[in-house]
Image (cartoon, rainbow, N blue to C red; front, side, top):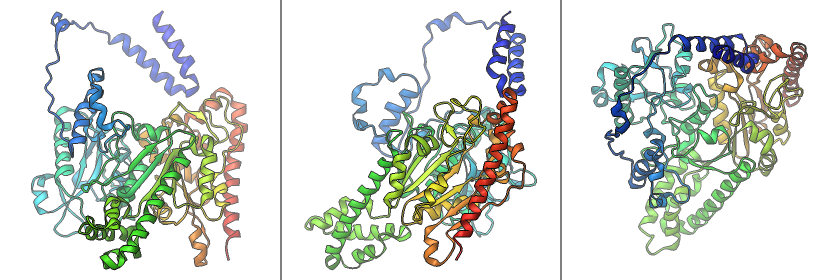
Length: 598
């Protein structure tokens, strides 16, 4: 009877998710019955003691080291009850040292990538799409390559340098996204079943590349897919789901701007994988620079981020005044910094020279001391707000609209999963017609809120809609344009999610983005107000009319397919409306683009 009751429960629980899911669960029950065997437990286990010897972790400084050993280790080994209050004093403000997730080494993957060197074309796409930063390209000089000479390739386009792909097997989640996007005819990446020998050898190799190989400038520009991946990711080894559609965007943003970033993160998936106690994936480079990250409430993240921007501006305005007063005393360093303080590519280097000049005068000059005390603001900070559609479209929309209207130079990144992902898949204003979600069990009956049109209405807000897997270059271009735009920027990024029930699997999340665009479900675009001053059309449509079946695309996801199984007549009606809404949305964009032509 037990088997019957379990199978009845499976049918009731998963019936709407499709026959495949039901059968998989039924087979699991049958396998459980036939594979039961008795395990003899030795009596000695009753009094066994844990005699595991763990080497203390060594961080980059005392605070980091103490946190790793006293807080992170004890929390992850479920011995937190033994931690005295005194161990928390150094982080009593709630601060978590950057670069702590790298020490967890969870080893949760059943399969990990294997690099087939002979097939590699050195395109770096695998690294670009990796949600967790576990697979990376490294550039080695002759001396560095000597230690791993059997697993490096001569680097294409760079004489005297070598190329290697490193895989942190103990941090991998086994999603397979890297192997899926590999464009080589004979795949350069294959998924390899975990065994201790392979995992250990690959981890040791990665640790060498990670710790002993320096990041180098190359001829490949960071505004290209290949060049961007030679930059250090300052978000690594997060707790995001395997195949996550959100974290690849965040990782890429840190590669482009991470050493000068401030991030205000709305509560949701991106705050959970962004900093769940006791660790954070956000880390620092060898100079100790990395994203400064903070999480406020769900509903006020935009205001929280605006406060960051205003405080940054206030501090930098004071530095400008101090530099102007110091110009005759310090000379060229002060004047050079004043000339480039708002140029992200030059302010950092000029600021270092200015701060160094002030060091010598700090003891006797109040302005020089102020510059030294605030030298972290001499480079041009990049202020970002991260959050999902639940925040941006719904709960935090009032604040977001206020920030867009403010005209402040901030960047807003919306990870659009079209549901409240972190709380289990509730419907939001970003949920499209016909999608099944919690609070919309019979399919959402109204259209998705059009944030693009709302934001473009201001006329001075940079707006982009992107989908990484559909166009890697468009994603890069939009991120760089948004950050360089002197005003508010809004980027809406399509993010496949486990809540979608992608039948192909989350290893195909990049493919899912591609099909979303080709079917007309999602449009790629950039609206850049700065182009108006150049006499150009500010609205650029980076994707065209649908070239694939809209219906085939949505039927590949359980959130739509389940409606057809349960309410076929309603499904047909809503799916027709949804497809019509998608066509209408594209036609509206085309019309708007034409209306902006000179």
